[in-house]
Length: 569
Image (cartoon, rainbow, N blue to C red; front, side, top):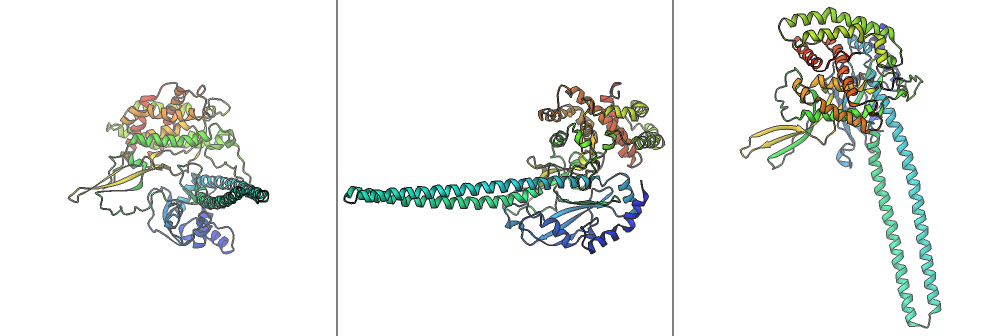
């Protein structure tokens, strides 16, 4: 890594951005204290028709959830309030700003681990959103032209019909002047003409009203389209930026804004909607449950099943798509995906970097930190299936993780190599689950609060700093090992994997003859073991001992249940 990038960003980044803003160049904001009303307006006013931000404020206290990032809530004040619009989501009261923590070590860590990749991913989505909006506008213009032509044709036809009726009436009047019966007929015809004219006028008025209604709907749809992300599980992205030196920031939808008071009603039952972090809803792994939080009402099976269904949409979209492996680095190109993790490896590039990290640095960490910790904890009988675990790790380093073996596994020219765009850090700590908070009150006034999953709500995935190219089944097994208890996994993993697998097959993009169930389930097993060996080695230097024991046993039991001699071949 070029250490000069760290120095440049830490010591000169703010000054550089301030100079750019002072001379009217493109706005570039990394930290919340660099925000201005003009900048906020430039983001939101163009995204919401009919709205104008007149003030904003940043909460001093950072939100939880950022290991190397500062996450802050921004409050927006609008000239027009939400109640004046037909769509309650039109004007957000709050948004979230995420940026690298402003310290030398944190910036250094962000650069070393390419954490600005998340900003790249969001910029890619914003480009796709802009292209879709342009296409929608073109379609709307075409439809408006067609509607205008149809209205003109209808009016011409109405005029012609009226002229013909009048001519007929005149002829009847001329031919039947001396006949009373004929005069009566003429009067009837005249009445009919009047009725026809009135009907035509009514039709024209109805058409005008319909056009006005359609225009109103189009305005509302424009707001929705401007903010509708490519995938429903991704929060709305308002702004995303990174610097050459590796710092980054983004402004996103506030999925879980401050809770509003429960409605004041005479009813004994009240409810409101909110979100909860997926890892907490699933039991919070080995970490204590916060005081006052009741997770007994959450359906873990529903959470896992729907997370798998949602992530299958991304996996299907880029399934074995060789186009994403092309490193197009043209300036301002929307097709540049060179920031994706592992892209160089799938192109056969980066051998030296790979060997230095996996075959040297990771193995040194195993021998220096992880193995001594394991040996010490084994004397306390806290670790399960220790001998088998060490045997598998030895095989991992001796052959499986070697560059040539790795390249053979990811050879895209082999028809049975599974690769796609993956989240890369797919666990319940990066997922928000919709919930309903119910407050029941008995006749004596005693209140009971109970939460449950809002099953018609939308799940959201967060933190795309590891997004890249990889085996999709590794994402699935990472989630299972990370967040499901051993008992739950053993009882449900094949059923849950089947739900995910069937989504792939039903898409029509995954050939079940090549990617049959047993083959894909083996990739799931191998991917989970491979990824979590790496994780456990890193965690041995990062987490408390009780947490390491938890994660070790999550993996060692998975190995005991699934490993066989051919799995790493």
